[in-house]
Amino acid sequence: MTTTPEANRTALDADVIVVGGGNAAFTAAHAAAIRGRKVLLLEKAPRDQFGGNSYYTAGATRIAHDGLEDLQDFIEFDERHPLSEVPPYSAADYAADIKKVTEGRNDEDMTAVLVEEAAPGLRWLNSLGLKYRLMYERQAYAREDGTYLFWGGLHVGNVGGGEGLMHDHLAVAGKLGTEVRFGQDVHGLIVDGGRVVGVKVRVDGLERELRAESVILAAGGFESSAEWRREHLGEGWQHAKVRGTPFNNGEMIAAGLEIGAAKGGDWNTCHSVQWDANTAHNESNRELTNRLTRQSYPLGIIVNNRGERFLDEGADFRNLTYAKYGKVILQQPDSIAYQVFDASLRPMLRSEEYEMPGISEVVADSIEELAGKIGVDAASLSRTVAEYNAAIDTSIPYDPNVLDGRAAKVSPPKSNWAAPLETGPFYAYPVTCGITFTFGGLKGTINGEVLNENGEVIDGLFACGEMLGGLFSTNYPGGSGLAAGVVFGRRAGNLA
Image (cartoon, rainbow, N blue to C red):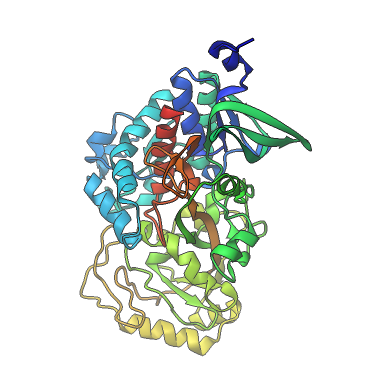
């Protein structure tokens, strides 16, 4: 008896299986479901830990736009809008920022798609039920006249941050009829006649196979595996703190490689930030999530435990430097450093990060006393601060909203936003390296079709999100990770 196509379809568990549970996975699922596909999304985490790395973000998403008027059709109204200046951020600016921070190692075709489709992608998600707003607390400083100037090209984020993003995604999936299963340990791919036709999954210790016409891999990188970090990023990376989900251990990358997929992207670098060094439970913290980052560092100075500066805190806007400085912290003695501010700067620090419960904050009336409290040689720290203060070009106005060129001409220099540390009390915040995600994954097309070592498409297999290598290397522009999840997740879902 021959099997009709209709009968064969009913034998499938779904038309499309999506492996993963973050922003890219759900975006792919929505795109496929809207096309009328029966979608099954398999999330490794239990229900109370769902959301992948996306849950742990601030929800910031980088898009090209023509200014505030261009954004008002899909962002939530805020009474501060009439007082706000949101400079246009073109697709050319976006592409240039990616090329600059990755030192030209980005895939140009993927970049072109990202910068053109990120904004339409957010509008599409907004039409489905996701909510967006301007990120005043993260991307603008209030000016003396009560107005706001947004900076750095990153202006839009989700209402409720990463938590709001993922709960919105889950609600949309429910409306679209997507079946979401939690606690699904997918560990392998099923291949038949050269085509991926399903996945191998463990549930409550039992092995089973699930079949589909297409499989979309959106299960993240390998940052939660200390073994993989040490192997691919290098010695010392096993000690980095995992900012996000503990479930991204590279298992699905390995599954792709096992069936012949090619590696894509830069396997030797990653997104890593300055992370609270001493707060209890400073890994995969679902309550504090992104609040454990310390991202007001461009306003002050950073010293190691020898009391020495070792990087240019004001090299560029925070959005373009923060994802590479975690690595530099990891390379310092004992993998620790201290952000230092004085009383005049303290009110400018991000309240969500520097006033969080249980923060590692050290306060003292003098630099010498501060040094003693953080275990740094007082003479060394005092000398560093004195040399820094004396080297500031105070003839240039201080303006944290722009690249003000107010430099401290010391070694290393501070290229912008140099303000003397001279008014007590003084503040120190211990930071270490927090790893966000790895830049290496599977090689794919601009539609997320996974390629083998010969550059040929593996039928039935797609990748998106952090699993799709090629966009980033060494560094990345803030907010472009969630944007890439939207763009390439949507593209994969449109084809699967």
